[in-house]
Length: 237
Ligand SMILES: Nc1ncnc2c1ncn2[C@@H]1O[C@H](COP(=O)(O)OP(=O)(O)OP(=O)(O)O)[C@@H](O)[C@H]1O
Ligand SMILES: [Mg+2]
Image (cartoon, rainbow, N blue to C red; front, side, top):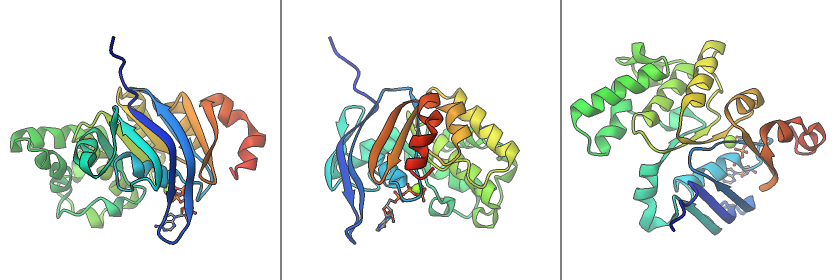
């Protein structure tokens, strides 16, 4: 009998930055395929550092990252990145082509898809985030919320089975935020979402992982973790 490997498995994951900052201090986490998990925690708790290990933007100082059973390393980086779509906390880190259309098409073309296929994916993804009307615009001249929507479209266009989003609702207006929540709820992808938007976490994610100073302080049912005000307060939320 073969068992399906978890979509994401972190074992004793630790990360220290070059200046010695210990951002992750031994994180164990297993996320089955198709799950939606929110990562919450105070500023500096290690959320972005954790997320950046999921597609190899960062490599572990110690411990390991497995994606669909495949251990992340320099050798497996390309394969891991085909599985994991990563939306940056800061959309400016992600958008770089002269038009929105080109930006969203970049990933699909890079995957070797035909121009026609790529175009279909661009339209699907921009419509999904409500930004199809921005297709001809210049990314760096968009508003913060428009940039955020386009950055999400750029990742959706590549149809990765695992979506990793860092603060996806920041700078979205209420309508954009609602659209995002409905979109994320409707996905069958594995979703890992770092957020300070605890209501988004509750609406989208049945499971919440609370990080505190680089460690998992709680991991459980969303209403349980987010309902524990003493714990949240202890962890700076
Ligand atoms: N490039 C870096 N060099 C050194 N230290 C860093 C670097 N990036 C982050 N850190 C530190 O690592 C720790 C975790 O930061 P991280 O960005 O993962 O937190 P976060 O939970 O995403 O916070 P926020 O809610 O503010 O986005 C913090 O102490 C931060 O100062
Ligand atoms: Mg962060």
